[in-house]
Length: 464
Ligand SMILES: [Zn+2]
Image (cartoon, rainbow, N blue to C red; front, side, top):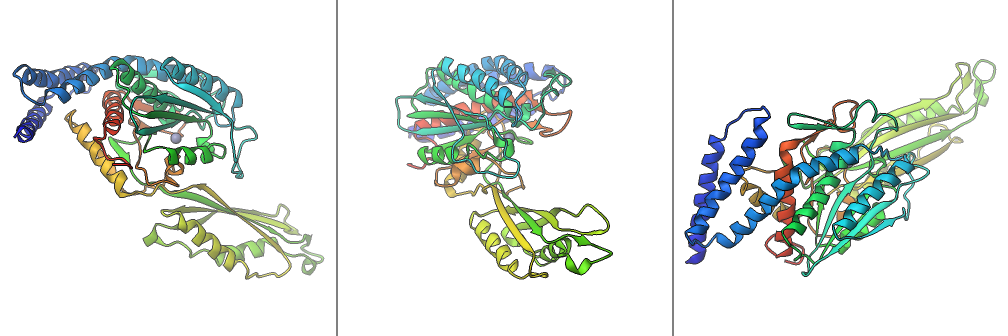
């Protein structure tokens, strides 16, 4: 009876909220922010009214109201945190910058009550572009009174070079905050810090363990943190990855990204006087490319395309060396093995017998594979979002980009949600990277509530 009554009230509330949503002014001026707050306050005034009349939704509604009001208070400090983080340059190869920003992040996590350690790169997976010195990850643990273990991911490194900050400092403009690396992924760090701050302020500690990992090598495919992320993935019940997204969505699936590097070594010779004494590496390269050009399998989401090649440097010399690179995308981890063995099998066939082929296959990032648990956790996120009168889109299709969340998912069935961060645009671009400020409150609310609900067994977890 009580349950039915609560459902009825909840339905009424949803109706009420959707009506208010329609009435909500749609101006795009700076009024927007104020209007949004008034709107959210009004919505919870409705709940407060119901509470006053002694209706049974009260307990949850009250705690949600407390979280929401705390979220509203964190908005301005979160913007300041983004300013602080964007103001420290931290390209993936900028070891000094990464050290400095790592220290700032670590200090903030300690202030929030975390046990912090700086983890050196381990089991480094070397790729062609792996930096000589890889930045340390910041790892923080928050211990609570419950049993659920929750992992939060974001990264501190950017694709930008030292010196670019001076021309593109942090700035806000209407509903946007601009800055290099702000969308990818400094806002994600700020979101995690302020979500923890919300939980602390409302006195919530019913999780068993909240672990925060901020790595420093994501933009170079995480050579030094991938094994740590996979290990942490195994040790947690739920993973929330705080990369940004285009539009109001979260992602359940991303592509795996690989690369073939083929080097052909032949023999140089004068092209005019004695070409027959040479071994033309360029001919062999062309042959190998042609006999591996049809390995894409669109139905399986497997793509392989040769994209870069070079050979020789003098017109009248038979080229002794040639190289090419192919880009590979997969949706299943097994497809890495499938395509690698097929390419190696075909390359046993050569055009010129006595040239040497060297083939390397870089598994730059595994695919994030969706499972039922992720879908159910995502559905819960949509419910939480609806409390704000907002709709959350769940992307179940891979769009080509990779993510560190896939390393976390590699050896566990625990649900993994990517794209928990703010709406962000212009990542890896030169002058227009920004996040949408009106996404701060909904995303803070979403992450805080998801941690609370997972902790209390209200959302779907590996154990439940
Ligand atoms: Zn990123």
